[in-house]
Length: 506
Image (cartoon, rainbow, N blue to C red; front, top):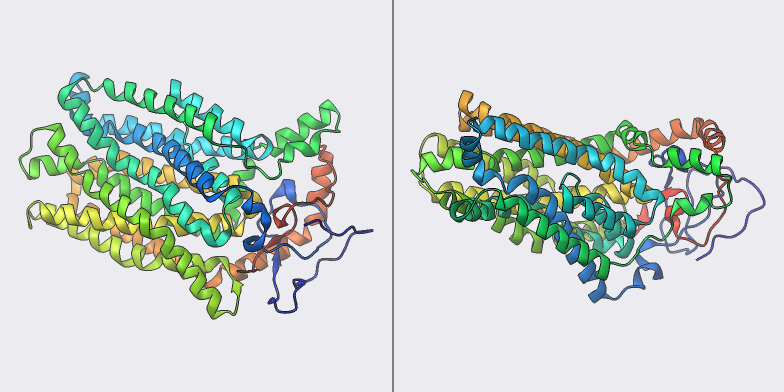
C-alpha cells in the first residue's frame, strides 16, 4: 500500500485514526527510532501488519524451512560455549590448572558473543541480510566467536505477522536454548570415548552444515535496505552515511529507554540462571551422587534440554494466546506490553522455586537424583515460556530497529551469562550451592518486578521519550543530513519505514 503524496511537512498530531471507522484510535510513537531514522515525515495511516499481504509472499512450508534452518544456526553458538563443560575436568587436568580457570576462559568467549551483535546488528541494517548471514556462518566455520541469533530474529519478523511471531519465536529459540543443554551431553559422550579436541571438530562440521543450509534454503527476506537510499550520493557522502549507519553507538543508545533496559535485565537473569546451573554440574552433581564418568555427568544436562524442547511446543503459543486475550479485552487494540504478561508467572514463581529446590536439595543431600532432575526439567520449560515473550516484545515496540534492539538485548544477556559462567564455581566453593541458588532466585525475582514495571508504565515511558525526541527532532535530522544521509521520501512500503506505532489494532 503506497503512502499518499504530500506537498510539505505535516505537523505531528498526538494521535491518528486508521482509515476504517471501526478501528480504534492508534497512538503513533517515535520513541524507538534512533538517530539515523529521525527524519521529518508526513504522517499517514499505516497498514495493519496483521492483514498486510507482505507476509503472504512465502508459503507456510517455506517459512517452516526457514525457521528450522535459522534455529539450527542459532544452535551453533551456544553449543560451542557449552559442549566443553562436560570435559572441563579433563581439559583442566591436561593443562595442569583448575576448573575455575577453564570456566573463566569460556566466560571470555561469551564476552565476544555479547560484543559481536553490537557490530553485526547495525551492519545488517545496511547490507543484505542473507549475504551477511552467510558471512557470519562462514566465520563460525573457522572460529566460532560470533552469535547467530540477531539476524535470525530479524528474519523471523520479516516473514511472520505480529500475532504469529510468538510461536515462531518459540521454535527459533529452541535452537538457542537446546544448544546449552545438548552441548555438554554430546561433549560428555565424546570425551568418554575420544579426545576432548574432537568436540571442536564437531563444531566445525556443524557450522559447515549451517553454511550449506542458509545458502540453498534461506532467501533474502529484507523488505527495505537502508543502503539503497545512498545509491545517488557521492562516494565521500556515502562513506560518511554508511559509517553513521553501522555505528555500534546506535545499539548502545537504546539503553536510554527504560522498557528496553528492564527487558534486557530480565533476559540477563534468565541466561545467568541457565549458565550458572549448567556450568558446575560435573563439579556439583558428580561428587554428590558418586559419579566418575563424563558420560554419566552429561546425562544430567538432558533434564533441562528436554524441558527446553517441551517448552518450545508451548511457550510461543502461550505468548500469542495472551496477546489475543488482551486484544479482545481492549476491543481490538494491541499494546506491545501485553506480551510480557505471559512471562511473569514463570519468571517470578516457577523458575525461582525450581532453582531454590535444586540448590538446597543438592546442598542438604535431600531427595536423591529425582529432585534435581525434576527441578532442572521444570525450570527448562519455564525458561521457554519466558524467552519468546521478552524477545518478541523488543521487536514489537521497535519494528524499524529490529537488528539494533536484538543486538542490545543479546549484548546484556551474554555478559550476564559470562558472569554466571565465570563466578559460579568459585561462589559455590565459597558459600555453597544452596546460597548461590538463592542469589540466582533473587535475581530472577527482581527482574520480574522490572518486567511488571514495564507492563505498567512502558507506554507512558515511550510517550515521555517521544516528547524529548520531538524537541530535538530537527537537530537530529539536520545532523543526519550533515553526515550525508539523503532526505526521506515516501515509499511503497509498510509502516516500519515511517513513524512507528505504539498501539496497533490486532
